[in-house]
Length: 333
Ligand SMILES: Cc1cc2nc3c(=O)[nH]c(=O)nc-3n(C[C@H](O)[C@H](O)[C@H](O)COP(=O)(O)OP(=O)(O)OC[C@H]3O[C@@H](n4cnc5c(N)ncnc54)[C@H](O)[C@@H]3O)c2cc1C
Image (cartoon, rainbow, N blue to C red; front, side, top):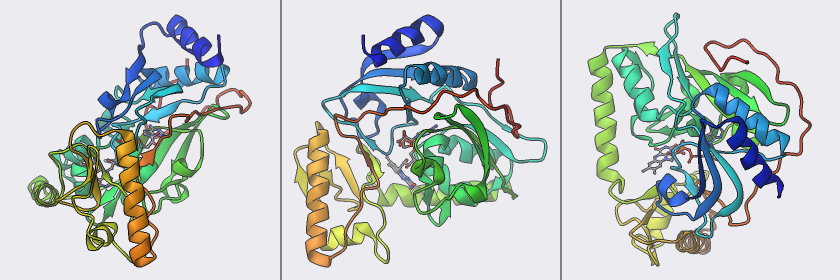
């Protein structure tokens, strides 16, 4: 039995209550509705379960691939036979701390986080209301829209660092947040567990009105009726990807079931039955055409996983550190 199979066996024996799907089609877990089977997909029911699962995977030198809402990932049609995916779907705690900050776990959706802030008369997260990802994926990507980014409102992030199995709390200024990037994206082995948000008080009605205005903008400009993974390309310095693609005459350009959205050239949509190859080929055509026309090189914002993608964690197993956090980040037992 190889190490992944041994790890799956150990997870079944030692964490029998945990939801574990085997050979699960990733199309069901991706906003693109694309993706073949992954060998294992586990959903720990709390932060303690997640850290225990990571400990077991570590023992077998398997690194977890973390999954939020799957709204920024292109999974391969061929599947991922070497991957153990860990979903944060059940990490849903959210509450106000005594000092008025918001504590939320990695699986909380950004829309729920924004709604929670609004209900509690706290402004600053209105921009996040229409982003379909989770807090964990949002921290990795420093998700943002309409002039706001998570980096503007995060006070600190708690994460498990798989290589040394340590729990750490990182203050905002050390998170290296930039345009759709963060320390956690650039550093292999970071599992986001939770974050604390510092916001300003305001009238709940005024916050709701702002959220409504942004949601209307999104509805009129974006192809929300078709599966996609949001903006396909990052914004190149001094340009807008959508404008460059539109100017290249690529709006509506189609490969198989994948299409450059007719509504918003920055989105690639699945018009039905698109394969990961359709999306990839289309994105490469867009990139080459825009480069030939303008000399600007478009970088994908979507995370594209190739079929042979696998993660290895050969770091030394070290006892987990204890830390003090601004909220319950999973007591050690
Ligand atoms: C219709 C639509 C509109 C969108 N609009 C916007 C927008 O306005 N602004 C914007 O920024 N984005 C937008 N996006 C993209 C996407 O929603 C964001 O990038 C979001 O932050 C991804 O969150 P997720 O939970 O879906 O992450 P996933 O897609 O599940 O994962 C993204 C990355 O984060 C990692 N990850 C996820 N959770 C964790 C965790 N707990 N610990 C460690 N790593 C983790 C994954 O391994 C992966 O590398 C849009 C997408 C769609 C489909």
